Length: 163
Image (cartoon, rainbow, N blue to C red):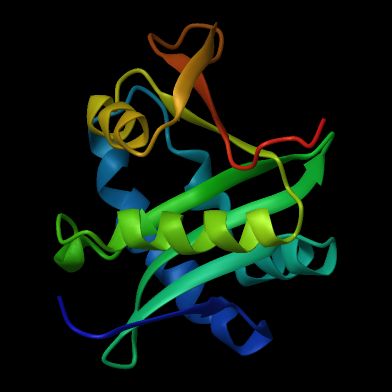
């Protein structure tokens, strides 16, 4: 794997992040019974996430945005992870796993005890990937009315609570 730089996004990164999200999630629209909500992200919505305290973790390779992960502000010590994606040409090279390690380390240093994320039953590769990273399924709910899919919520302990 080429040298990878991990860092938090700043405002100037948001157009590239929006483009990456659309490149990564766009192809899924053909194989899912409903359009991925990630495709609704815009530079304005990403700006809103950052303005509200969310953290957008990035992986860069050779001055190209390679992967991203959005962590919403924690509630009850638990961060919500969204918009996890790797550039389609760079998938399968360990970037996503490395970005998760970086993001989880940063969240742990901030005193965040756990992380939660959701994916779809119809994306078994995502389920396997998150399980491999130590996330455990905690709930399944119907995706939306009249859509043959389920939202699978997963969680991982990031830090041990002091007694």
